Image (cartoon, rainbow, N blue to C red; front, side, top):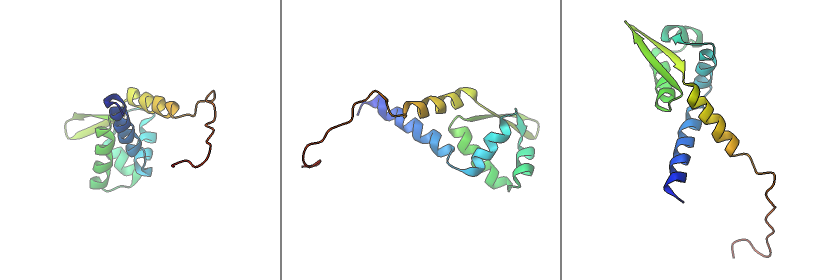
Length: 110
């Protein structure tokens, strides 16, 4: 396996991990309409501050969301390029329709 492939696999794992939780998906769904204050997210999700912070950190570490500070408040928004990256990765996993089936003769693993 080449280094390039390993890096892509690691990035894919990071992105899909960030998307593998219902709360994180709910956060992204809320952010689809634009930037939201963390207090709005907390109220709508009825989530404890520490739990919400954890999920936002996972999304931010994966590059799926970005934040900006304004006084005491933090505002979050989706990073469109990261969502496009998830899309491209998912599409790249689609089986190739033109690939010929592998014909095995005898036992597979010797």
